[in-house]
Length: 116
Length: 114
Image 1 (spheres, chains in turn green, orange):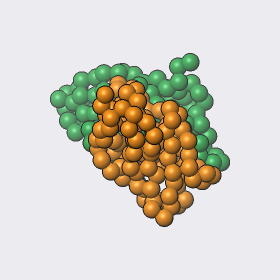
Image 2: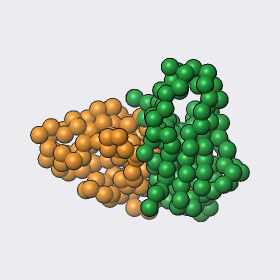
Image 3: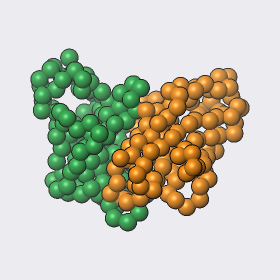
C-alpha cells in the first residue's frame, strides 16, 4: 500500500543547478499538488493538477515547472535552483475532480532540499 | 481568493487541560474547512473537515471544531490534552468543488506540559 511516493528524500544542490522532484501515487487520484513548507510560513501551494494534461499555478509558482502526462505522476522541476528554494517539499493527492470536495489530501513523506 | 489565519504560532498547555487552536478564514465562496495534523518528520494527515453539513464537526483523537460563519472562524478544540497530541496543526480552506485547490495556514505548534 504505497500511497504517495516522493523521491529523493534528501538533496543538496548548488545555485544554478537543475533537478526534478518525483511524485507518484497509486490511488488513481485525479488531483495532485505540490507544497513547500518553511518555518513560520506553513504550507504554500506551488502548482496543482486536476488531471492528466492539466496544471495550474498555486500561491508561489515562480522558479518551478510541472507537467502531468499520466494520472500517476506529477514531477516538480527546478530549472535553476536558488538558495530561496531551500525547503521541504510535499506532494499530495486526493480523489475526484468532479462533484463535491472530499478535502482529504494524502501526503508523501516529503523531500528536503538544500540549495547552497 | 481564499486564505486562513492561524492565531498563535505556538500554544503550550498542561496535560489534561483544554486545547484551543484558533483559525479564521477568508473566502469569496462558501468554504470547506479542514484541520490537518503533522507529527515530527511526517506528512500531514486529516484531522477533521467541515463541508457545509453540521457546523460542529468531530474528528479523530477527540478533537472537534465549530464553524461560525458570523465570526469567520473554525477553531479546533479538545477537552483534555494528552502528551501524544504534541504536533503541528494546520487549518486549511477550499471551495466546494473537488477541483478546488486547498490553501493552508501558517500552522500552530502544540506543546503539552507534563
